[in-house]
Amino acid sequence: MNLAEKILAAHAGKDRVSPGELVGVKVDVVLANDVTAPISITEFRRIGVERVFDPARVIFVPDHFVPNKDIKAAEQAKLMRNFAREQGTVYFEVGEMGIEHALLPEKGLVLPGDVVVGADSHTCTYGALGAFATGMGSTDVAVAMATGEIWMRVPPSIKFIYKGTMPRWVTGKDVILYTIGQIGVDGALYAAMEFAGDAVERMSMDARLTMANMAIEAGGKAGLFAVDDTTLSYVKGRATRDFTVYRSDDDAEYAQVLEYDVSVLEPQVAFPHLPSNTRRISEVGNIAVDQAVIGSCTNGRMEDLRLAVGVLRGHKVHPYVRCIVIPGTQAIYLQALREGLIEAFIEAGAVVSTPTCGPCLGGYMGILAEGERAIATTNRNFVGRMGHPKSEVYLSSPAVAAASAVLGRIGSPAELL
Image: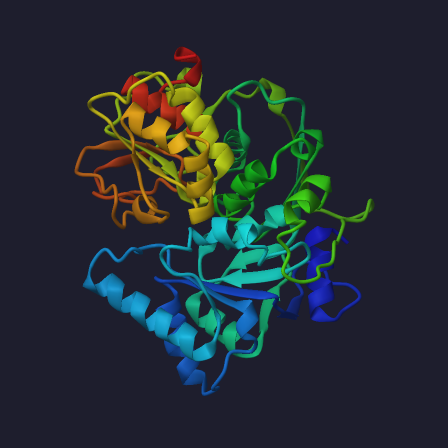
């Protein structure tokens, strides 16, 4: 079996599972946020059980509209907060929280070999740790909260093999954008994307988390990396419980195997209005931007902030551009502060926010007006994603976003450095 099948088989109590098979699966972690948890809580009440299956494995993270942007957001957060206190679940509040998909790995709450379900499509991020993690609807998550189990159809797996050495300024974000550009937004529809190859083996954990995060943008059910020394080094000291490492068999079967040479890649930019509408930075042309967003569950980690500062330091954000920087968690924010990154961002003319999803989903902290353009390290650029339906979002790495903030147009960091 391959990695996804091994994890699902173990959690289904079966020796073997095959693509297309319907299985009941025990879950290790159930997750919801301030947008989705209120729906899950309402449905949980309707089921009629009094307690969640295991308070230590049900996690609530208010991150989309928190700090509360308005009364409705405050009411949603209050409902979630009160339920978490009543049930004794794991809960993170403003001051110690972060963007959920940056926070849970950091806290050691998701571990290799886990099955994780979350009422958020980017739950697939945790595949970077060798977990089977997937987003589900709020009603399904309510059932998981009540029973500790879900049912699912075992997905086929597609293996992506990346070879070669990435050139300067090419990051994990560029690799996944390129991949999505090659296969399309439905190229891995309901498939487990398994990332492998010598280029992947050299990737940092932050880069892997970025790639796994965007598996859903190719239609993937999950995006998984094999557990190696990089994974174990990250997990060591964070893990809050025991875990099991699963590995694909050498003779495992895949629906498809695709190979890419990363040594020939350039930084990528996804044009509106699909993550698959990618172009090489040399093909972008002259596109002015009004806003640059550096952060999100895709690229708000320390490696991302360091990369962005490396481009911004010694330069000033263009006077016509608003540059918004959002560290992924409070711990990342504090580390960035200690390293002088926050000072460098502010000196360059950027604004630094408390951790929040905010602008990524067009929530707040960076809404676009009609006709405005943003370059963002986020994961989606659909019509109206960041504001007005006639605004535009271009996706890139932190390096390209930072360079574009200085240039006033989409451009490469190589133009500045």
